[in-house]
Length: 436
Image (cartoon, rainbow, N blue to C red; front, side, top):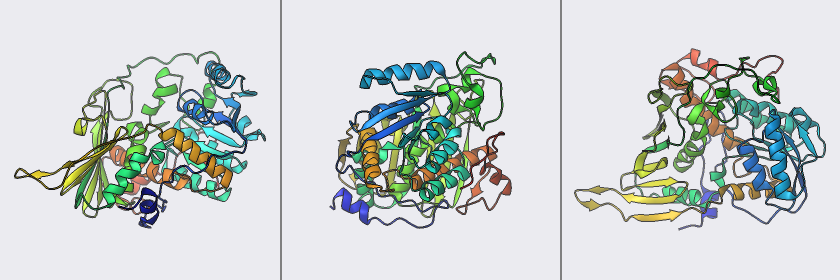
């Protein structure tokens, strides 16, 4: 069998897509980068700080600025950086635009809620900075289009935080799928059952906490009174700011459904679900959802549930490539092949679990640093790849929100023009959708 590098390099990707033709070939780490890189982080409460911590494992990286609209978060993360590196960042900001204006910053980490990604990434690119942008790349289809355009126009080196693209066992699984040993694949089952996520009880609006610039937190989103359910981590369950579990986990997992099957654009999309587990809680996005993406000769099924862990194959997340001879199952722990047994006869040999390394984010960061030094725009999760799967996940959410089976031509819905209103976001003044 060909090596992973050779196989993925030689794998063709169909040109038709969601308005894009992403390069699907993942690249592993080359030699360590050596030039000094000064980082500014916008949004350092959760994953943004996890990303920064991983970057700081590399000696050539320095954190010179942190930005967060919550003063308590900002001070806590400054102290965390001091513990890691022995000194606090020189600059602590509550307005993200000061990170963009700081000419000493080479690389911006965008770790804010999804509804902010577009404005902040594009502003960083315009200022000549490279960007590590958390997933999903954008919170709407048009935002994703603009973000790809900006990265290429301004020649920024952008990595999207889908670190599974840098985790070798995921690439090994794709290589096996494309070997043909599974036989004809009828279905790709993609699932995310998240028992760790409890119900969020309804709570009343309240005064803005001390030290929080709430108007800046809202940014382009609709003006609303402060409510703790919409703030920090749980923002992801509200349509103003994110797309629920479909875009939170879907961009990671659905990405490999497309990668493994070497496809881009579905013929149609339909989705069904709702608030079945917690009908009276505060969340807007569905706690249970099934979306079907139709392709020629097979379907991709997305299946998620919040509050329970009973997913397929004894796992709470992953993918099952269901073939005539067997099913390849992959998740963050590793991959294996389960033979199809018909009339007591196995159609292929089992492949035992090949465990992952757990080094995906570290590999992802090192790949980004290498690409920055070499000025290679094709990072392991380039803007094209990140935009493509963010858009694909958005299609599932739009099908759910309209309650209709939708036909997509790569740029618009052709059978339901009303659904096209979801493609372009409406920004609150004075914020405007960027022009690139």
